[in-house]
Amino acid sequence: MKEYQWKEKLVERGVTYTIEMEGQLIVVENVPARVNVETGEQLFAPDTVERLQKMVWKRKQPARVMQVPVYEYA
Image: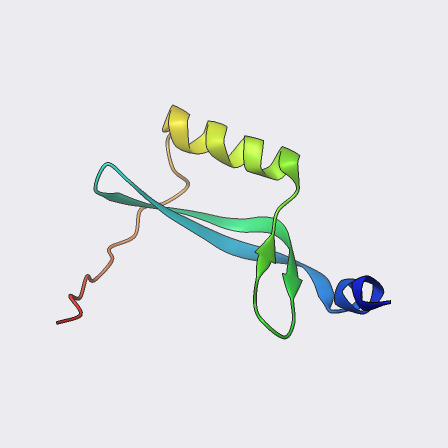
C-alpha cells in the first residue's frame, strides 16, 4: 500500500538538469523526469540518463550560453 501512495505523488515534468564537469557548469533544459511533488526529488528513466551522459560527454554545440554568478558560502 505504501508503494502505491508514493507513486501517486509523482508527476511528469520537464526539469533543468545541471552538472559541473571540469570546472564548467553544464545546464540541460526540458529534461523529462518524474518529480515527487512533496520532496522535489527527480527520477529519470534509464534512457534519459543515457542520453544526458552522451550529450555532456560529446560537448556538442549548445543551444545557448549563459553567464552564471558564483558565490562562496563562507
